[in-house]
Length: 465
Length: 120
Image 1 (cartoon, helix red, strand yellow):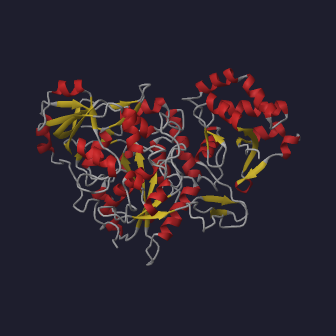
Image 2 (cartoon, chains in turn green, brown):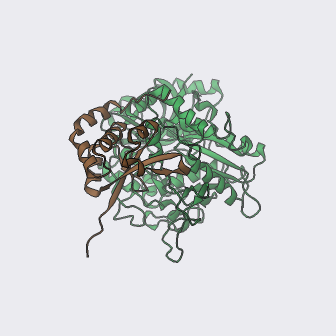
Image 3 (cartoon, helix red, strand yellow):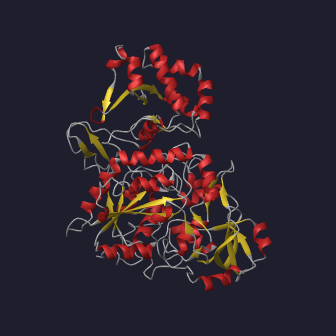
């Protein structure tokens, strides 16, 4: 058993921190003449769906420990075969720095070189080129290999992936080639408001947890502003997670920040919406039991696969537990709604994962807290449990009370909000709604649109000195 | 043995303004109250073919875990409510009325794709 902040980073070694903070030392790298400008991944309509700078940052600041750079062809193949790095440690997705052949040639780079990666024309990072290789010609097949198919992955994939699945689209739209190698940030960027308040990379997060004296910390994954159902899930997870000693001490909310699907909430509202639960007038959580943080990553919406990445990130941040609810990090009906619970209770052999991630060799140390679905019971006047319909026929899944609880869906709530109706406080805290309206006024729309994605790509979350 | 016919639902939130429009009519009796009475809702039940038709016209829409068609444009919801009032029905008549003006609704929805006025 590990305590929060002391749990080993994923990979059994130390946290990756490939950031050159000493500005004089860092400046030497800025003079490198072999350069590649980081460009966004565009969907077929030209809308940005990813910017690989977010992966550069997440690698360099240790969120993806033990990953220290972009994957070689062999490593990509290993990940696709059994979701493991070449070192054997569990890792769910190929992480590739894709370029066109023209970009590579124009840079003049060769294997073995240190190449300066620029962002909006300014130095950001250096990649030490270990390999330059061609990605599979058939990107649709490549994307299918990443996420699965109903034929190959019968346990959890229900519907073939297509262009409406943002993560699938990212892999489908990758450029022709990839550069593999270790990366260092050589110009630590300055985060814009409001991101700067939530950027607490793994080393800092661990220090914060220790300073607070928290022993058990439950991670909450989010790409949503919280409704009261989310809040209740966090509270219940906190009680479940104490390993028999006592309930956990705190919830660490970690929001995924990056390009998202149209219709998701804008990133700024997600962060400040969660923040409003414990600060700024909300106080539904004591500020000493709740912290909101972020990770830069363009969501892949890969449900069970995404849950492995989430486990890695939050273990690296020092959490002891990770809560997983219905439809974890999912979009549409591609996966079984309980695919993540399936993975963390049995493994997913069709993906090469034969045991649950926290029970397999070279797996995770963070422990899952499985949450079923909650619903509001008007008779009880509170949120209640609906069960967790994993295929265990001997356990009949029923609501906890004998009434008729009302399920809430995120899309129902989005519909309510866009029609200009303030949700009742039993389903959304007024402080959270105020945050949504605040950012609605900024962008003219409360949710992600093509316009927002383009603006986000223009501004990003950071500024480079 | 007959195959089970799948039914889906479209919910219309009844705020005070909409409530005034149906007050005293038989539709008022069909209002359901949710979340302890805080939300008033009229529900239309649609068959699979109609659900598919709506989703084809408005690809942003989806069927949620409760079997409701959600993420539909505000313009569609507004037109559907007007059709419900006009036809005094929560059935096929209201849906047919909406489809008569589908191009107009789609044009309005297109305008609302990137801008909807925020609440005051």
